[in-house]
Image (cartoon, rainbow, N blue to C red):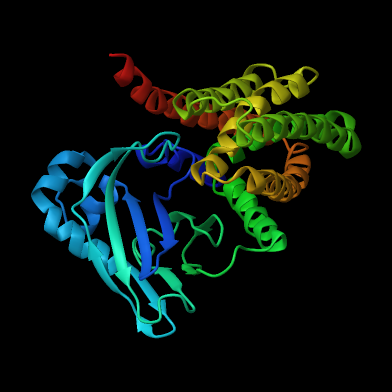
Length: 366
């Protein structure tokens, strides 16, 4: 039962969305005198940074009105911009409150504009994000600049503002991001785990080879489904709002988990179920690409590399889980402990996510 504790921990409210880490949006653009930065910061992050007693309940407008000077000072120290001549001096504008669309983790942002005056402004410009990573190891900074769209993470917080990146570099960035998006996307991992749990009894009844075939069928169907909609959404062919997609992703986990609990022997229709729900998960996978507002030319390469990264990480998850589950499926304790109890825990997590993710939609409707 101890092995199921990590699943139970996901019942905590902070895990209601796919990723634990917070996010900021940054537009970084060289100018004739230095660099211009537009920073969109989550109000809750600012609340923590400014030492508010209850940052989870911060009203952005009140935060800006009461702490405008503190926010500007914080923003001027949050980033470091340098040219070959040395460090650039920052001047910030008054912060404003802006709505943010398409990002489940941040629906409202506090926006600060920073203008940097640099010695030798056109030579060896370098931007570093020094904020939030120390307190939130999973924090992401989504950066758009002439040097290309990228994601800054802890330990990878510097951006060279030179020429446009090569296709190889762009592919490498989004290959890595695809893999990270899967393994840190706990709802996608739980959905995969739900698809795999029922393979244990198949191994016990029909052997490891038949169980492997079962796993390949359901995972391939899921892959085909999310690959199609990831491409369509990333290229703006079909776009669904995150406020609708995220609850359905959570519901898909509950459906498969309850299927495992009530009908674990009936695996035949699961590839179809995995493929249909894969279509929904693809819209969720595409969120990072859409958040970065890539140019049409960048999107095709980025979407392809991102999807390959997802598939490689997915293969890793399947390999790490499938064989231990195939062995455990032959044990007498597998069905009551792993299959039934595990499925109930996963379903409970998913139901909590459904309710939490529906709350913004209900608020909008009311």
